[in-house]
Image 1 (cartoon, rainbow, N blue to C red):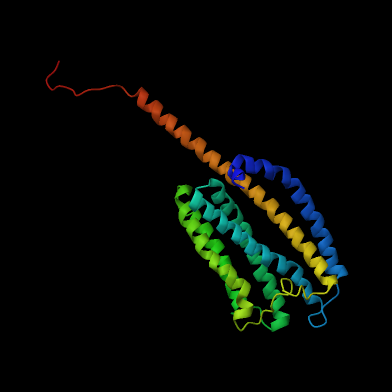
Image 2 (cartoon, rainbow, N blue to C red):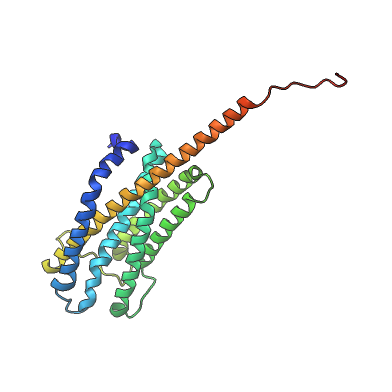
Length: 259
């Protein structure tokens, strides 16, 4: 993977994948929405409200995946000084924040008919809210300075430290007294969902993943453009300063009374 740490080589690969990710994601999204809204059966307890899970679950899983990607990119930047790691983290942060917000909103809408309230300070809900704050904090810290390079290291440290929240999110339903149900997908004995509900969920997860990776590639291209623009501006400033020094007249001390 070290050979892909070169930004130019990485973007050449990403450019080839972008059309496949976009059109594949849109195709999966159409198929997933059809099966989720029209083909899958209602739940015997939650009825049609259960269809929210086809948006809620993929957004929750990919929000955590985005943070893991951000933390790994930040760690590679701190340890090996790979600029791609920092750019990857900066690109993943706003997408992850948006996915976390979608997860929280859909969860609240789902919680009202299920629990009788939009929000409770449940362990899973609270840790997901903390995840949103971590994304926002990272973006705020990375862009807090006039010189973007000054925000790279403190933002990366925050991202790496915040990774401890991911296992808390995962295992909160097992370690704490919580209203949130336990995992129905990643179980030792296999998923507990019926196939007619599991299939559209997996299709929607594939759609969200493709579109996430496509958005990540688009944002990476934007981050690369910003870096190039800053380098061009810095080069122009250095040239102007050098030219100014060359044009400056060579002067010496003026002797009083000379003339």
